[in-house]
Amino acid sequence: MSAPMPNNQEKMMQDEDFIISKTDTKGKITYCNEIFMDMSMMSEKELLGKPHSIVRHPDMPKAIFKLLWERVQDKKEIFAYVKNLSADGSFYWVLANITPSFDTNKNTIGYFSVRRKPNQKALEIIKPLYQEILRIEKNDGLDASIKYLTLKLKDEGVTYDEFISKIH
Image (cartoon, rainbow, N blue to C red; front, side):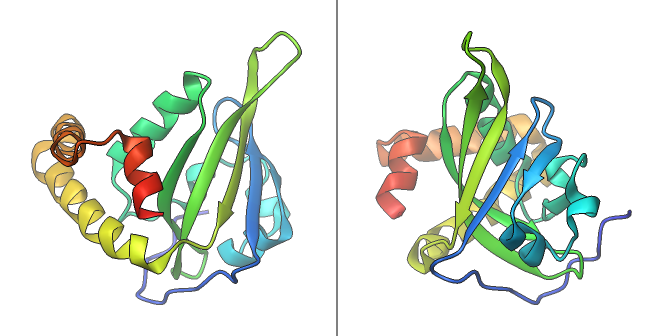
C-alpha cells in the first residue's frame, strides 16, 4: 500500500475519544482500537503488522520521532503532539502518550500509545515550531533540526517534558 497524497482536509477527534495502539519493539502494530481504525480510515487487517509510521504525515519533523524513539527505548514515557495521515489523505492532530511495555523481568516487549484530542491553543505553538524544525531538516539535515529544538528549549529554560506540560 503506497502512502496517500496529503490533502488539506483536517479531521477532528471528539473530546471523549482515545486512540489506542500497541506495537512490538520495532514499531509494528500489534493492536489498534476502533477509533484508530476510524481516524486512519484503515481496517484492522491494513494496520496490524504494519509499522506505526503508516500514519506518519510528511509534515512531521523526523527530530520529534527521534526524540520519541530515544525516550521509549530508554524505558521512559513521552508525550508528543503528532500530525497523522489518514488513508484518504486527510490529517488529524493528536496528543500522544507513548510508554514502553515490560515483561516480568523489566525487559521492553513493546510500546503502548494512547492519543487524545489536542488542545487547540497548544497547536498554535506546535504548528509553527514543527514547520521551522521541518524547514531546518530539509535544508540542513536531522542533526541541525535537533540542535535547533534543543537550543529553543534551552532558551525557554525548560526541558522537552516541561515544554509539553506548559502548553498542554
